[in-house]
Image (tube, rainbow, N blue to C red; front, side, top):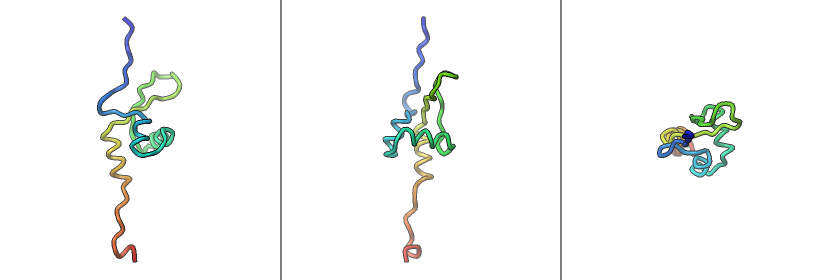
Length: 78
């Protein structure tokens, strides 16, 4: 029987799904991964060309929390 390679499901998202969440592109998500700002796993076979990243939902939540901009205080506005 031939083994079937299946991408993680459930708590893992594709670069396209993450891009939809952040209203960006999958290319931008891959840049975030390569820069180390967003952790991911690569499920591609080694040496098989382009990586196939999966991002844990908890990692996306962490990234969004850290990227959040706090509202300015009244002293900062003045």
